Image (cartoon, rainbow, N blue to C red; front, top):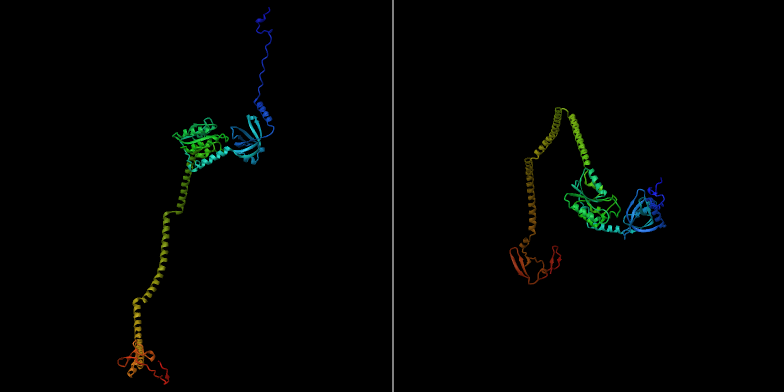
Length: 480
C-alpha cells in the first residue's frame, strides 16, 4: 500500500533550497604580517632620511643596536634598529640618549613581534636633542641649589623598623623587594602604590612619597621601578619629584631602572641602588649571613683563645725548663752575686790605694806650702831685704849728701848775693824783669834796685851808651 508523500519526513518533490553563502577565508597571523610587510616594502622603494631624537639606546648581545626615535615637536616615535653590519665606532658614538641625529634607511614590519620599525643604514649628527638639553639645564640648576650635595646625604639605617616602597603595585619591583627581604630574614614592608610611567606618573610618585613620609614608623623609603627607555624613566627626572625626594624627612633610596640607567632622582636621593633588589639588600640585614658570621666569629674566637692558652702553656713549660729547680737557680744567682761583690771590692781597693798614695803626696806638698812655713820663709827673706835696703839707703844718702855739698858750694860761688856783697845791685822793672841793658827801659820807667842789704826804688831819667867788654877784654857792642 502506497504511502502518501505528505506522511514522509522529506518532500522529495519540492525544489532544493539555495546553497548557503561561503564563509570568507581567514588569514593566519603570519600571512597578515607578511602582507603588511610586502605592502610597506612596496611603498618605500628607496631609502629615506628621518630626523629626530635618540631615546633608550641599548646594544644587544648579537651586536645590533636598538633605540626609539622621537619627534621633538609632536607626540610620535618609532623603534629603530641598526644591524651590526652597518655599525661603526663613529655610529656607536653618535647614538646616545638625547642626541639629535639623521637616519637613512627604510621602514619595515618585523613579523615575529608584529612591530613597525625603521632599519637604519647610515647616521649623521645633527646636535643635542631638546629633551637632553632641558634635562642638563635642570640638572645644573638643581645642583647649583645644593640638592645634590654629598654633605646633605643622610645615612641609611642598618636595621629599619618599616621599609616604605613607592612603586607600581602590579610590577615586579615590589615582588623583588619582598622576595629579597624574606630571603634575608624578613622585614616590615609598606607599599604606597604609584604610577611609574606615563602621564601623571611624577605626581603619583610624589603623593605616594608624601603619604609614606607621614607614617611615624617608616625609617627609609625605596623609590623604584624596573628598567626601560629614557622616555619610560622620564617621570623620575621631574623637577617637583626631585625636590620632594630631597626634602623628604626620612632617607630615600633611588632604585630606578638598571645599573646603566641614571635619573635625577638618583642624585637627589640619599643613596642609589643599581636595581630594586639591591636596594632591598641595602636596607634589610641578612640574618642568616649575620648568624653565619657570628658563628664563624665565635669559632675563630674560640680557636684563637685555645691557641693562646696552648701557646701560653708551651711558653710556661719552656720557661720552667730553662729555670729548673728554683733553689739551684737562687744558689747560682747568690754565687754569681758573691763573685761580683768580690770583684767589685777588688776593683774598688786598687783605685782607693792609688788615690791614698796621691793624697799623701799632695799632703806633703801642702805641708811644704803651709802658710806658717811660707810666712816664716818670707819673714826671713823680708828681714834680709830690710837689712840690705837700710845699707843701700845709708850709702845712697851719704853719696847724695856729698853731691849736695858739692853742688851747694858751686851754687854759693855763683850766687848773685855774693856779687851784691861786693857792691853791685840788680835792677828790675816793676814787673820783676831784670834789666840787662838800656834797651830794656826807657826814660821815666820805674825801677827797683836790689842791694846786698835792702832795696831801692828809682826812676830812669836818662840812658847812656857805655862801651862794654867781655871777659877776654874785647869790646862788646852796645845794647841800647
